[in-house]
Image 1 (cartoon, rainbow, N blue to C red):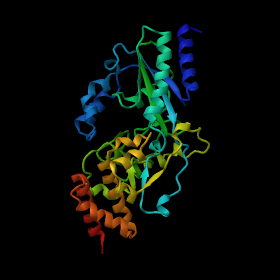
Image 2 (image 1 turned 90 degrees about the vertical axis):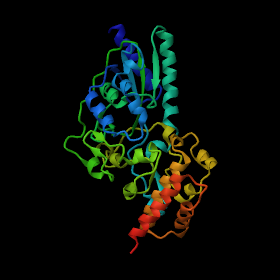
Image 3 (image 1 turned 45 degrees about the horizontal axis):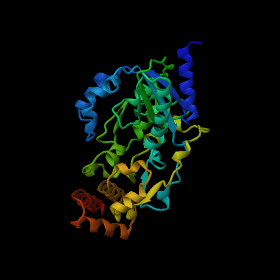
Image 4 (image 1 turned 90 degrees about the horizontal axis):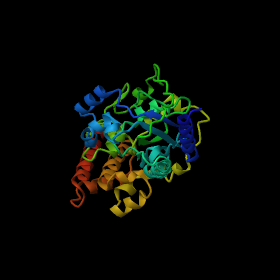
Length: 355
């Protein structure tokens, strides 16, 4: 056994000791999809995520982010066991849904704290090398590198799918100048002829191995900072932060006996009362999102999302208190323009649907 091989085994073993599920190593190589990436950005499919265009060159080649980078240590946390939720909407139509990854502690903190610990340990052993911890707040095509590291393969919904274990994983990386032997890459195309995610996407955002962010409910409710096209309101359904539909229908996530979930992602709450959100102050939002990745969404965004979900709830059942709150927001000059405009658009949609 070579010294290099021993180093890699020690690193991956340490990743497992730190609680990561799969872990692997990839070369710090440029993306194999440079043309596709540039075309996607040029077409504006990134929506208001201007940082992707701004950091286009860094996305293409991780060595431009960490000078002299040679390897990427890739890790993942499992955050859901594949079980479907009890349908809260059957008891309460005025409930706003939250994507499963955001129901527990903020994964940025959970993953990065352990990666930084590992970086510190590696710097002690290799003081001449550079180690940078990354968790999706830096310009890195993490799913492609994770596939190269053997963690899983990118599916038609663009999520990383681990065969037999599904896609409910959160990713992290350490980009390093340390030269490590890469792991065996994952076998590509975990989907075969399956198109369930494409067929189930309510906004038609998915085409094979590509997502139009400007139509994706997760993007619209989390990253999109301005008004949402009223034509998309019905398809957003009751989601107020993210969306899990393409994962819920994936056969890889429907298997029994999926691996255990990391304790940090035990749900604090699975949904929010829409009337409660529509009455929030900034202090209420902060209190609700303590230790949560949902704090990324500003108050006016959460009210915008809750208004859309409330309109969809009212289309299904009469709820006078909810309707009254929407009407109040539509004429409240103290509310941000986006909130008022969304309330007006929701009321207009409801008026069109009335017999």
